[in-house]
Amino acid sequence: MARAVAFPRSSPARIALAFAAVYLIWGSTYLTIRIAIETIPPMLMSATRFLIAGLILFAVTYRPGARHEHLTRRQWRDALIIGGCLLLGGNGIVSWGEQYVGSGYMALIVGSVPLWMALLAPAFGGRRVTALAGVGVAVGLAGVGLLVHPSGASMHWQSIAVLGSPLLWSIGSLYAQRAAMPRNALTATAMEMICGGLLMGIVGLAAGEAGRVHVASISGASWIAFAYLIAFGSLIGYTCYIWLLGHVSSTAVSTYAYVNPLVAVVLGAIVLGEAITPVTLGAGAMIIFAVALILSSRALQSR
Image 1 (cartoon, rainbow, N blue to C red):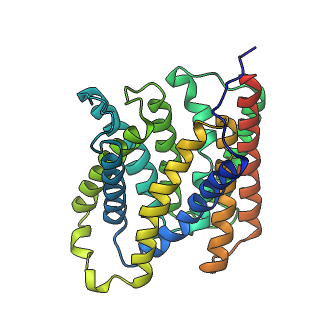
Image 2: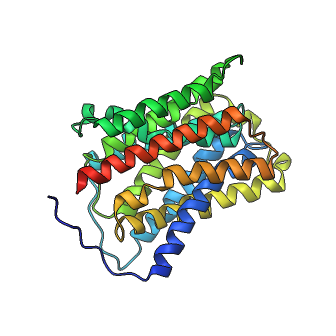
């Protein structure tokens, strides 16, 4: 039997606030991304967002008087790989994809990350899929298939392409578990944001997005959404997430995977008027149920 992990004491109110931040802020980023890219090209918007947030975090962790950890070339290499998978592949595809699909749809697709992680974990030296997790994966993949290609509906290639987001996010997350990164989680996050932001900037420039940037034409709503993504989505959201990992179990923290899509779907319907069809509800329920099974399987394995 695994030993119980002793977490630092913290007030229930602080823990509740941190969970609320991760649930509501990260769940709302799909809506704010959709608003931001209305008048700002997606890749350059995301690149600027993560570069600013990464540099702020880096300045905080390397402020005068703080203990400085020497950063190696290998750590920067791994930060480049992780940032490429998580941010360019994961978040970048979300920003690009929301030009073509609804924010709620995108959130449900990203909510399938635990399915792909369960499938890919053995390739990275992780545990094999248990019977319970296997049922979850099967149900979840069926839900993803229903969401991407509902019966009788035409299939758009963009609806398929966005599946690259959870796939690459899962690869980056699994690689990060064995990567050579700094012990300070905020320093590691800052490095990944900077590297991922640079990669997104390169892709955005290569795609010709610079020619579509017209500062005078950026709407006030897009500016507000962009600022929200930096301050809340990147800085507050990630900080609360990292803080929670040090104060409660990872299984409890991972519940954001099936709360965020619910928040995103509701906000998309209320604010943007996105349709919630019976097929979307059914597919979403299948994905969320599948994620719950997989996370339950992990909790049982860790006992």
